Length: 171
Image 1 (cartoon, one colour):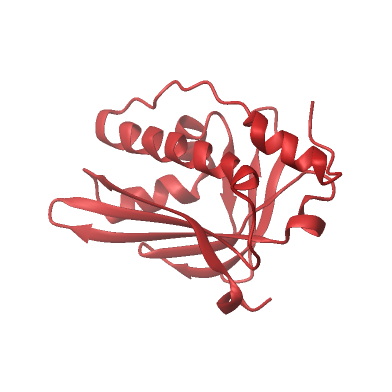
Image 2: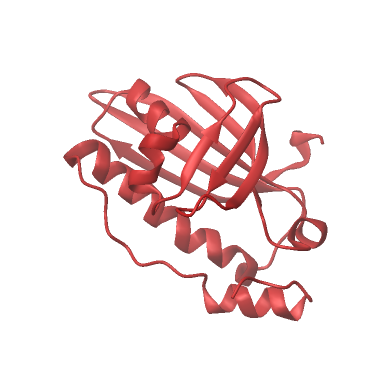
């Protein structure tokens, strides 16, 4: 896989009153991620080529991938493949990159979701709704000690677009 062929489709930048090390820990540990990622646990094999896994609150595999770039506490790039039948085959792989920079007394966190092909706005709607909620909850947890309680479900536009492509979705 040539990551140079991937173009960002979704980019979010937030500023967090924290340290790069704490943001890195939040992004890479199951214990921390369960608190802000709606009960999902992120597991990162801490090396390039290692496994990247996200498990649901009931420990089912939700996302699987591989660590592409690992530069603590500055940059993490992973393949981010949702565990839905046919999704990767029809939509291709997804890359997620977290860039962490000191910005005065805060941390600038930039998240990029990149693809090796153009995807419709309807398909991208899942990430466009999910990432702001995940990152806002992360920010709240690091700054106040409390994550946000946001009810999330896959967007209907995205589910309809996937169905139209013949991709089976959960539920």
